[in-house]
Amino acid sequence: MDDLGPITGKGEDGMGENFRVVCRSLAINPEDGAVYMTTAEGHIKYLKLGSNVVETIAGENMKKDYFGTYDIFTSGSMAYNWRQVFWYKPENKVYGVHGNSGYLFRFDPSVPRIDVLDRLTSIPSKLTGMGDQFSYGYLGFKLGPDGRTIYYLTGGPIYIDGQRVKGAESTAKGEAKGLEDLHLVTYDIPTGRYLDHGAVFYPDGQRPLYVNSIAIGDDGTVYTLARITENGKTRTDLISFPGPYKK
Image 1 (cartoon, one colour):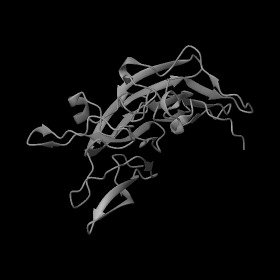
Image 2 (cartoon, helix red, strand yellow):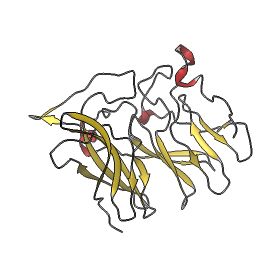
Image 3 (cartoon, helix red, strand yellow):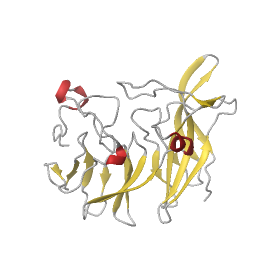
């Protein structure tokens, strides 16, 4: 095991200009073993197999107008980091989502080049033109068992009497600013087909809260961890629901 040291300031233990929110997801090229990650500044870093030097990719970065503008010295956002990514073997490219904006992108390290493809948030979120309530975005982003469909668990605004329920203006933590629905969104990579399959509810009408994970069974069942309240007590538990596509 090698500890290569910090790659972005002093990370989330830093103070003031030494603070940087850290990347939560690595992309690994199975062909050559190279590992890709990002920094709060938007740099794309990589580590070659067998090397102990983390290098910066020249000519491309994560600072895109569509992703928004961030103060990299404060918490409450993922800044210019990507939120979740995976290596897509058929194209030898990285697919990922930028947390705060919810934009899906494709990264080709051989060029290098990032293409911003679509906003992967729920339809209700798109209609508001606003960001979702979870300040860091969502980690529930994964390639499905068919090898072509992206599954994404994301937020959706709640409306009461036609008015959107607003949360806090900002937060200094990686938390939800307010209540929201949980939506399942899929994206077919070869065709670019986006589908919002609607909100997910428990049988008693409660909303699954604080969802930041996903797994998809071979039969299409979607699994995640979520908060649920029963008998006056709230806990985090494993839940599942039928996915839109069966094997």
